[in-house]
Picture (spheres, one colour):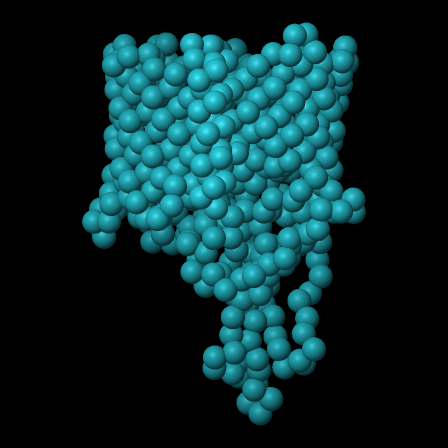
Length: 407
């Protein structure tokens, strides 16, 4: 493992040494200290990204990006390949192949139709970062219609280890990923056009759910019909799903408006066992559901940016699509608001607030940013949960300090 890490580091140093002073080389360093107000625990992290981008004449473009992460809770420095992509331009056709990202949708941050890359767990709720996947994408730019097809060659689920850190009971899960065979390739299609100044998109996805389907299981005592103590646990598997999406965005006067929705159809197959006394209670969505985001934004006095989005989440969750055993699946109604105000040329204040209208809880995320020079900034922020019910109320109160540099 160390040899592999050292090999990547050597490769990065070679690239850096060859391209010193070149505008195609860019890097970002983000250092953060997070303090849990209740437990007084301190989590420090250093996250860097190094990206090299080169034009291949008029034929295309190549992109290589690496990401490194250090956390005081982990004994190892993690270095990952984030992008390794080749783009080719053939008239009105663009071909894109490699390890990277495909971003779809029109909403701000929460995008129901953006299903090709899984969510990156362990980041803050307002970052909405994604994990890269290996795929081939073809886009045809017609006069009034743009068509895109994506084939994902290797299924990448959400990180189980990160999921187990949030739900420790899931640590025992050992799930087998779908094999990289032709029948297991994921397919996504999108058509995009413009009508009366509004961008309209229709999409289709046929692949796997990034989140494992999980069931609570236990044995029943045949004498009294009660659960057998010590027999309970969780089992899981990856399942197929289809999704139909629509998205639109435009402007009305000086305001931006958008709406995005997806109808998700997970495959439904009951968990079973050779033991007739073994029972299963599915805690994942087990029927078709709808996800909708609609919002608008406006800038007041050229200084105060504000946006508000209504969220209808038919899977019953902001982040983790699971419920308590025997609990009825109910949709979440929420609001996501963003504010940004420029106090001076160097100082700005931002705030993100996520409301859970069903449970009466909220998550407040204010942040003050000081930017003494163009490529660097200092940040201080809070995460403040309010309420006693629902997913948001379980977040911890945190103070965050950060230094960000980009070159």
